[in-house]
Length: 244
Image (cartoon, rainbow, N blue to C red; front, side, top):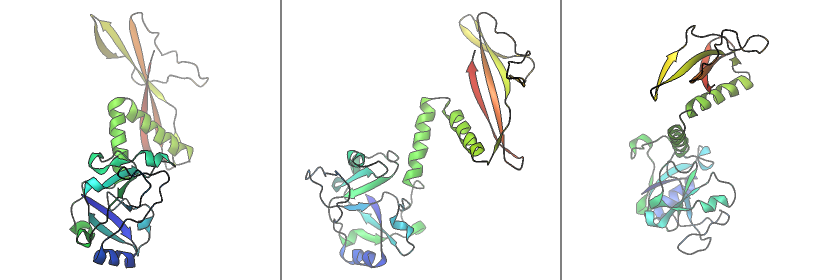
């Protein structure tokens, strides 16, 4: 199993010569399964671009480690306080993308022959951009699968945020009613005549053009909101459905 660690230049050079030994005990409440105690460990990364704080210094060097998965665990460094320790998972059981900020806890020394300088694009190919992006993409995929309205909800929330900070202007909505006619147990969708029309007048009351629902039918009203940038160009359109 490959792992990555960012170290100061002098420390990295020593690691290349002599290997790495467990040192840290900085995670509150963390007890390693083998000992049941908050033992020493090496804190490494699953991906070299999971930079966190250690890699922000341009003088630091990234090392690639070859480790035994049986001696390693993964925790979510994005959790708060002792909740971090509760996420302790054997490295062999960890599913990529499960934690937002996965941190690899190595409970055994890493010999020098298993330590080398990470060579970037010339090194072993990487299958994803970084762990945090993989986590977010996975959460989007899971939410999208569980709720068909998720994408539209997320899109509208983004547009609303842009409008809230002055980066977009929200324009008045237009509606397109769609009737579901129940015929013989099957649903047949028909778009009502008239196309897009205003649902609300200036006083906030329903437009007279809005046809009254007929018995035995369900009307779905789609409200489209348009968001433009301050320069007038289109940012995007979101559509919200309502059953009536």
